[in-house]
Length: 198
Length: 198
Image (tube, rainbow over all chains, first blue to last red; front, side):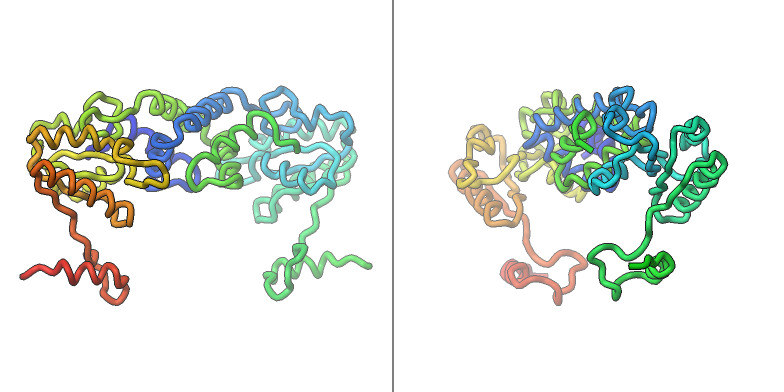
């Protein structure tokens, strides 16, 4: 069959989802059309609304449909402590740990000169102004533990030092419940170097 | 973070896709919003259009946005030979094999009394009228080789016999390029019983 028409177009468009190839997209399209039209309609409408309405929080750059996100609006939170993360998903993860009660700053990426991602793309110019303002006392750098993530953390730590703000890196080591036998040597080296007196 | 708002709703709605759980849905939502807004918009619009416009072909019940599908409109195809399949996806697969030049009939399911799917749900009442009409000379039953698929094929074969139409079941046996060593015994039994003289 000539794969033309709306169905083929739908399958092709579903392929833009991460981890979805032509076969999965086809399965999705048939399932949506055959059994799930109401859900499919809801999904389409929500997606359209999300694309049009969700932007960045003016203050912390998290995804939100409001001008300022719920976290930044929450008066009970500590405005002097900022946790810097790479993505909005990371904010959710940190919030689930429920030990951090400050504000966030979302980079939406990491420094990667080869991909053309510099400090400006991560909103760091705007962030440096806030550091210069003097309201921020503590910076917790929770970027990922990759080469780019470490480089980004190091860059922001330098910014913090320039403006006399204390910067901390989250601890790297053996995960809770992890067995030493299965830990890679890089992590173990970090865990040994970062040992704390008990 | 309280998972409320448009983003949480989007993630929840993405979970209606087959094989997509909350984690995957979250990854999809962030990817679409972060890097792929234009594609996300296209997807939403196509999906909405597909849900509203795609229906069944009047003649063969394949998914199409037209009243009669391309295959049924194609005058070069043999109207006296009908291949019966379970889903629109199966039509695409049979078309790719490029040996069948007749028309199709899509059941959109299989007989499954426990799920309340009887002959009427599969459009077989309408199909029996066509059989009675006498234009169909040959029926190829290409339902899946499952218990329900076999039962459905058997039911349709009975209908065909009633109206003096020849019904054929597609051959089951060892797949091309398959090694005997790895073939299950059920398939091998089929292959031996269906042996053909060379």
